[in-house]
Amino acid sequence: MTDASRHTVPLRQTWPDEFVARYRAAGHWRGETFPGFLRERAARFADSVAVVGGDTRWTYAQLGAEAERIAAGLLASGLAPGDRVVVQLGNIPEFIAVVCALFRAQLVPVYALPAHRLTEVAHFARKSEASAYICAERYETFDYRTLARELQAEVPAVRQVFVVGDAAEFVSIEALDGPRDALPGDPDPQSVAFLQISGGSTGLSKLIPRTHDDYIYSFRASNALCGIDADSVYMVALPAAHNFPMSSPGFFGALYAGARVVLSTGPGPDAAFPLIARERVTCVGLVPPLALLWADAAGKTAHDLSSLQVLQVGGAKLVPEAARRVVTGLGCTLQQVFGMAEGLVNYTRLDDADDLVLTTQGRPISGDDEVLVVDDHGAPVAEGEIGHLLTRGPYTIRGYHNDDAANARSFTDDGFYRTGDMVQRLPSGHLIVQGRATDHINRAGEKISAEEIEDHMLAHPQVFDAAVVSIPDEFLGERSCAFVIPGDTKPRPAELKAWVRGRGLAAFKVPDQIVFVDAFGTTAVGKVSRRELRAQLRARFLEEQKDAG
Ligand code: AMP
Ligand code: DBH
Image (tube, rainbow, N blue to C red; front, top):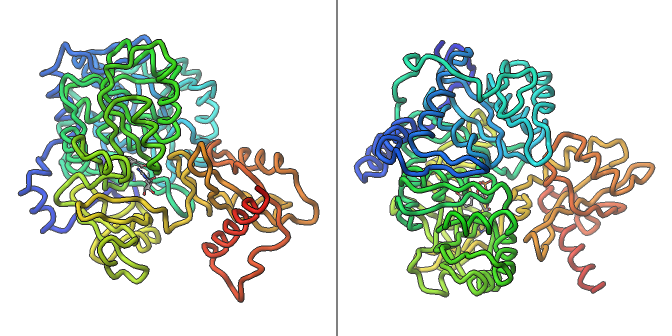
C-alpha cells in the first residue's frame, strides 16, 4: 500500500530549489541514506564491535544481520513501507537494532523517550498516524506492556505492538523473521527518515520530520568537529532517543565512522564509570547537572577514566563557573554543545581558546548555517547585543509535521526557524545563550511547556487557575513552580502533584514546587498576556525569596 492511501498527512520536509542546489553543490547533501550507509558499514567494518550494552556485544556484521531480520519480520507482520512506528526503548542494544531495521524496511520511527507516558505517547501516535508501537517489556521498573494496552485502547489505529523481552499477548521482537527479498531498495535521500520530537514551548511536543540527507550531514560534520573516527568509543549516557546523544555526534555519528557505541543504562557515575574503564570510552555527552556530578565523582573513583578525551555538555546552559569545575574535575577537553532537534547545532571547537570554551555555547556546524540575532520587531540587533536567535540551513527544518499553527508561529516567511532562544553573538560567531523568549522550563535539559502543565492543572476541580514558571535551581539549572489559585477548598500540594502524574505524563513534568496565591497579576492593568503574567509571578517569587533569605 502506498503512503498516501494509509495516511491523511504525507511526510514532507522540503527546501526551496535554490537551497537544495546550494547544499548539494557544497557537498553537504550527498544522496546518502540510512539503510545505504548502514549496509556499507556492516560490510566494511564487519568484525569491529559496533554496539555494546548489557551482556550484548554486536559487531557491525551482527548489527546489520539483526536489523535485516527485524526489518523482514516487521514487513511480514503486515506493516508496509511508509508506515510510522512509535519507538519507546531505553538504552539497550535493541533500540539501535530496531531503528536500523525500521530504516531498512522504509518504516518511519517516531521517537518517544522512556519517561513519556500515555498522554505523550498517544499524542505522538495520533499526530503521526502510527500503525505500530515498539517497546521493551520493562525499563527502569516500568512495564511498558501496560502502556501498550492503554495506547491501543485510546488509539486503535496502532494495530500492532512489538516487544523486546517477554511480549505477553504482543509480538516478540526476538521472534520476528521474514523473507529478505521482500525488503525494499534504498529510499529517496530527500525523503523523511523519521520523526524526532521537540521539547516544545507551547502545548504538547511537535513532530520534527528529518530527511536522510539533512540528518546524515549533521552527524557526518559533527564527527569532524568532535574528533570521532573508527578508533573512537562513544558512550550514550543520556536517553538514546534524545537528539543530542543520537546525532551530536551521537550514536549515529559513531556508527557512520565505524566507531564503537557503548550504551550506559543510567547517566550517573555508578553505571557509567565502570563502563568507561572497561571499554576505554573516548567521548560522551551530558547535560550540565550530570557533568557536575561526574566531575565531583571523578576525584573519588577507583575506575580509570583516562581514556576520556572529550566531554560534551549541552541541552541546557552550562555557566562558566560550572564549566571550570567540569574541566578541573575530569581533566579532559570540554566541548559545549547548543543544539535543538529542529536542526541547528553549535559546538565549541576542540582547539578553541579556554575562555571561549568556558564562556560560550559554541558556533554553528556549517558555513551554510545562517544565523540572525534580531530584536522584538525582527530587525538585526547591533553587534554583540542580545536578541532572538533565528536560523536556517542545510539541516534545520522548514516546518513541523502537520501543525499549521506552530508553523505560522515558528517560521518566518523566508524560512528561518525561530528558536525561542535569546543569544549574544561574538565577532568569532560563537553564541552565548542568554535565556529564552518562550515559556518553557529547561529542567536539566528536559524541556517542559508551561502551557501544557497549566492545562492539566486546570482540569483539577479545585484549581481555579494555574501558572507554571521556571525558577533557578542550583542542581537542575531550572525547576518548575506552579502558582495556583485554589477553588473553594485548597488541595494539598502532594495531591496536585499526584493529579498531574495521574494524567499520564512523564514524571519530569510534575511541578517541583506548588505555591498557592489568592490572585494573579495584582500590579497589572487590564488584560495581561500569559507570558507577562508568568514573568510577574516569577519575579515576585524570586524577590520574596531574596527578602526571606
Ligand atoms: P528541543 O527543541 O526540545 O530540541 O530543545 C532545544 C533547546 O534546548 C534549545 O532551543 C535551547 O533552548 C536549549 N539548549 C540546548 N542546548 C543548550 C545549551 N548548551 N545551552 C543553553 N540552552 C540549550
Ligand atoms: O537540547 C537539545 O535538543 C540538544 C542539545 C544538544 C540537541 O538537540 C542537540 C545537541 O542535537
